[in-house]
Length: 304
Ligand code: 13P
Ligand code: SF4
Image 1 (cartoon, rainbow, N blue to C red):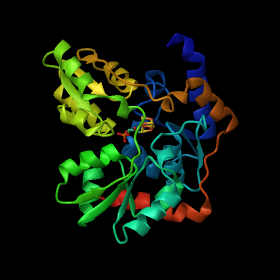
Image 2: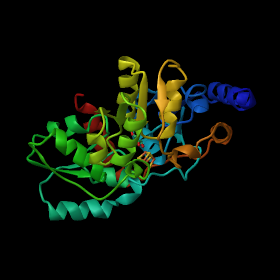
Image 3: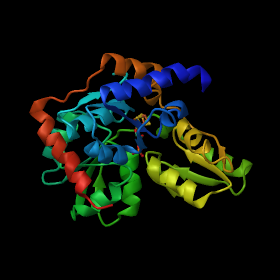
Image 4: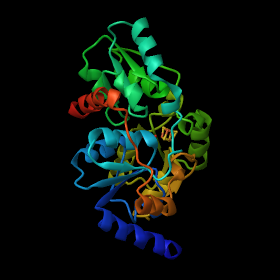
C-alpha cells in the first residue's frame, strides 16, 4: 500500500512514542489488519489479550463495545477508539432497564449477555459470552432455562446445539448478518458446486443450517487455514475474506459478503489522529464498572 505508507510509518512511530498497542478486530480492512495491528482476533481473543496488554495506551480498531470491554479489563490504562460513532446494532438493541424488566419477568433465570452490548447492560448480567464460547458458557450454568440476550439468532443457533436447556432471548439482530438468506447460500452452491460455506452464528438459523460450518470469526479463519478448501464463501463481513486471502493465494474466496459500516469507520488516517491527539478516550461509569467487569471476568473463566 505505497499511498498509505506515510500514515503507516507515522502510526508505527507513534506507537513507540506513546507506548501504545493496537488491538484490531478480524473485520478490519487489510491495510489495518496486516500493517499496524499488534493483536488481531475475534471478540473473545481481543478480550483475552486485553488482560495481558503491557502498554500505557490501547487503541481499539473495532467498535465501541470492544473498547469498553478493553477498558473494563484495564481500568488504569488509556483506551482510545479512533471514531466514537463506531457502534453496533446489537449493542443498540437493548438497555439496562430492558434487562431489569426481563429479570422481573423471569425471576431466577440466569442472564447471559453477548459482549456486543454496553457496559451498562453487562452490569445487569450474570456473565457475558461471545460467538466463540456461547455454547460452553450456557452449559457452564447447569440451569434448565437461560436468558441469552440480545442476539436472537445467536441464541437460536446455540439452542440447536444445547437442546437440554431452554433458551429465552431478545429480538436484537446484527444488521450485517441478518441480511443473508438461505437463497443466497443455494445460489452460491448452484454457481460453485463443491464450494465450502461457512457462516457466522449471528446469521439466521436457516442460513446456518445451509452451511458446512459455523463459528466465531476466529473459528472461521482457523477452519479455512486448516481445512484449506479450494473454494470457500465466508457468510460474514467482507474484510474477513480479504484478510485471509492475502496469505492464502491458493484458496478462492467467493462473495457474497456484507459490509459493517461501524467497523469501516476505522481507517489508517483516524488511527494516526487518535495516537497523535490521544482521542477518543473510552471511559466506563465507575458506578457500574465493577459489575460489568465481573460479568466479563466470569466469561473469561469459562473453559473453552
Ligand atoms: P466475533 O469476532 O466474536 O465472531 O464477532 C463478530 C462480530 O460481529 C463482532 O462485532
Ligand atoms: Fe455489530 Fe454486526 Fe457490525 Fe459486528 S458486524 S459490529 S455485530 S453490526
